[in-house]
Length: 425
Ligand code: HEM
Image (cartoon, rainbow, N blue to C red; front, side, top):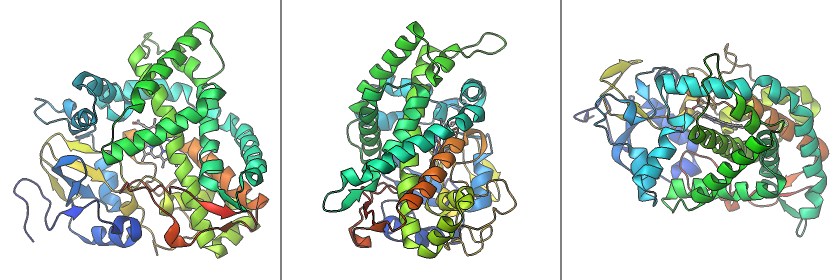
């Protein structure tokens, strides 16, 4: 094995466009986990070599170590090229536009900036608000299930288009305060944005997204309502600190986009997994109380997000036995951690009755540390209602295509099916 000159990574670089990441992801993760960590890799659109950390303890150690930052500008001296800004510029934005988007985004904030932003959002987007939403999530689910037969063509319905997407889009838009006639437009923007970011296409959807979000915030300033936008406009701390205009735009669009693009794919991936494991599906159908645990296990094994955003090492350091140099770009591979045999027995087996391994939530599919997913409670609730109600209503639902016909989007670490054709039975 040859160690690279400037990092602790050794061995051949992994190609993250390897088709095996699509065809045999768990075999791929198992090989990654067996290698000395961190593992060097190449990532589409990033010139610099990136480092992968995939074992459970290593992933948690990296994500909870504040010496890893999300925004390279946080590194003193600022001599690390901001890969994310550069990528946005490659996609057609000016440097200012790209900086504006990166620097005001909660996902790209570090240290006190992040603590402050997160505090404001957590004050408004509370567990109480999510719990109060449950009857509405159930109502929306039932309505969409009622409508499914009407979408059938030759008896086949695309469950992704007519259930998995509209459910979280409707829920997050109602919660945030997006008018009904704009909702499908947001769904389209979300898909285009993700495709652009993953494939190097133009980010032309962004202009519309920012303009529409600004307009929504302006309307709520004039006419407050019982929604999250109004709460975010009003929230302030003891010292009167508030979110700035640009922070408001950034958090509102992040909540809408993060709030549906991910959950939609938890629902499609999870439904497909249940169809693939009829014994497990029968368990769930026989005991709807299994919903929360089943959703936990489906997130572990089939979650939509298989890696966090890039982290940058702010200094030379050793973390969980791994060496990093200042400026290293690191990906925490959540899918590797969630199938680490040191933590999960028979990690490739889908077992809806699996006990979380001594931790409240043992998988890291929602991340870990200070950037832990703000919408996890909502996503779990939607997943649970979707899986239990779908199979209650359509107990004989079946796949209407061969496994080999199901197409995944070509994004290596974000698992998205293009469509999920089913027969309702
Ligand atoms: C952060 C996954 C649903 C809002 C994250 C992170 C992950 C994640 C892995 C951490 C990223 C990192 O550390 O680089 C998921 C998955 C979801 C889901 C798998 C659904 C199954 C949601 C929903 C919302 C949401 C429903 C909002 C309503 C956010 C926000 C952050 C975040 C705002 C940034 C938190 C911060 O930087 O402090 N999510 N998410 N997510 N998620 Fe989610």
